[in-house]
Amino acid sequence: MIRAFFTAASGMVAQSSKQDIIANNIANAQTMGFKRKRIVAASFAQALERSIVGLRDADRPPYPDSPVQPVIVAVDEAVDASPGAVRLTGNMLDFAIEGPGAFEVVSSGTSRPTRAGSFRIDASRELCTAEGTKLQGKSGNIRVPQGKLEVAPDGTVIVGGAEIDKIKINGEKAGETKITQGALEESNVNVVRELTEMIVNMRSFEANQRVIGNIDRTLDKLINEGGRV
View 1 (tube, rainbow, N blue to C red):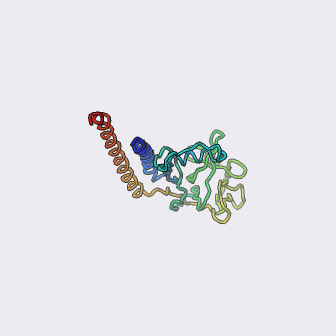
View 2: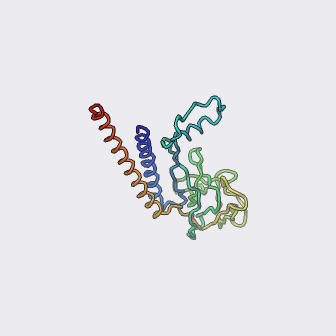
View 3: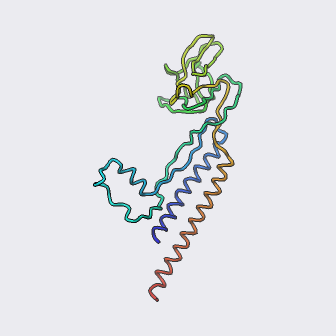
């Protein structure tokens, strides 16, 4: 009975975390290049197995002591890497990545990957995001001289017919990754699917609430009335 209580409680924790993730997905449905996140839940036995995978079998603690392993205690986030739709913008400073990979941008010495491909040319004539984060090429920041800017599908930056650099794509795969100039990748969030998952998740949360309520009433009768029998 106590196992059922903790199973329901840990399920509510997991569903609460999932609700936050779903809400964040919906909020970023219009964010270019955004990848939806999802919750990955595991039972205590699975989490324990992963944490002691390097130990010898003889050294592993004797858990579980029961074949029943329903308690969810570990939740983590995972990213759905499926591509979003590519939308043509006509802006020659917009780049969409088709296939695996991500742009690398740097700010204050810290780099991060991004699929959001909306860039501009700053006062020092370097490609950057709206926030001023510098887009990286094979030789560092990409400085663009005066002239017509073109970007080839392999990321080569051409100005006035001359190659000046190549956009750095982390995680690219030869033959699968290409860059489309004058386009942006939209988020891969399907709002209808997210709303449906939110409703299902809320129903699961409410079901676990009812389980806890039933267990609480049963324990109350066991403790307060059992001694009278």
